[in-house]
Length: 363
Ligand SMILES: Cc1c2[nH]c(c1CCC(=O)O)Cc1[nH]c(c(CCC(=O)O)c1C)Cc1[nH]c(c(CCC(=O)O)c1C)Cc1[nH]c(c(C)c1CCC(=O)O)C2
Image (cartoon, rainbow, N blue to C red; front, side, top):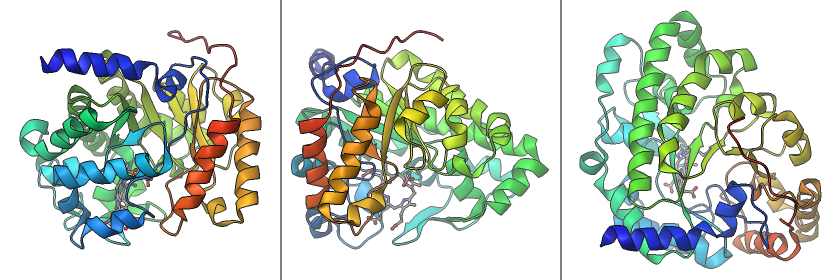
């Protein structure tokens, strides 16, 4: 019974602006959502969030459901993103990760040697993160737009485990990557397995699309990305191909990596504000959907500047159907929600997605 209902929901959403754009199909508007749209600048978020660790909020399905829905209601965005975090799987298997407000993920005993691999047992999503799956199931019943499930990509999660927290230069990570490539590879392979288990379970619970956050991959040269990171991201992308949902990738300062990222086989490639959308399209030699790329800092500027920058991105895209409007990184905490709302209006009123369909194949 549940399966029949889910199938009906899935087919209803298959025609949504976001999923059409992910497939490169023309539509009547440009879809838009915002990375970190849940829980950043919304007063209604602060009102219900409480003061504990975000990991505690994520573990409460009713709360996490409401927080996921808040930006969808307020902004009219074309997709919801699950209120969770990239460190939830490693936290759930007991690696000893917490999230400190204003700081980010912190690890009590960072990853240092082969013995630490034993602290990374496989994830059993139903047993280890039942609250995530309950939140997804709640949301699928309530949403009129697709729900994006997600996981951290192996490199970005590894950087937290190795550094012990957020990092500027990734020095310990790079020391391990170059100094003991075999161990580094085994670590990323385990993290790939965790990501696979997590995103598979989210789709099985009803998520309509997936995004892999490799936020910090842009710290690497193209050669190092291809050699040390790409195979593990590709493993995740391949392992979820049978689910039939779009697979998106996101990272910052990835301008020089765009083609290498596309080689992982993802369907959607996130672009930050440093590379214009038309230039990004030229850099990627296969048909993918691009997602981006308004500078989140621009949202602090006067509203006419914001509007003209939104229009400039739409102009660069020139009606290409394989495009999802987003920010080039996450919503900053000081963003005025009314400005985000206006961005959605401009994209919906003025964006065109009526160009010829993007030919997709196995190229
Ligand atoms: C690197 C990364 C993390 N988490 C995530 C990434 C990749 C995206 C990116 O590049 O920003 C992904 C993430 N984190 C969160 C979401 C949920 C949904 C959404 O996008 O709105 C998503 C998709 C919730 C969260 N994750 C976090 C918050 C804020 C803290 C809170 O509310 O307690 C939220 C809403 C905490 C977090 N978690 C992480 C950081 C760097 C921080 C910021 C710390 C801070 O500024 O307080 C790790």
